[in-house]
Image (cartoon, rainbow, N blue to C red; front, side, top):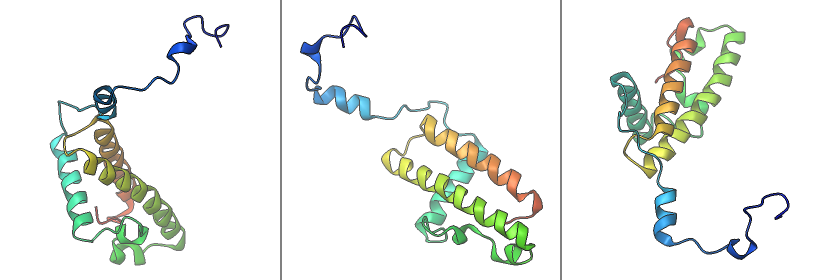
Length: 131
């Protein structure tokens, strides 16, 4: 290994990490700027709908606005179904990260912005999703 990396020292390989350092490393980076009002509103709605059971994190159809969905063509229903799976994956990730830290992190902020953008793009054909 020393021939690949001249700084490699086998004596320091796999040494235990101090618990205080490990704890510091495990903390997600906090975003001091917080969320925009639009993103904060979406995040609050998401968390509320997950908590009250309106959104089931393992049932993509729980994201669909049934009245609008039923009026779609079969092709558009297929696209809505596929996008519901994708959006629900992002929502699960957001909820899991928010359970770890109630403060805004860069990762949550990015996911909420991505979700908001995707939702806006997908709902040009109508209010397909309940978020």
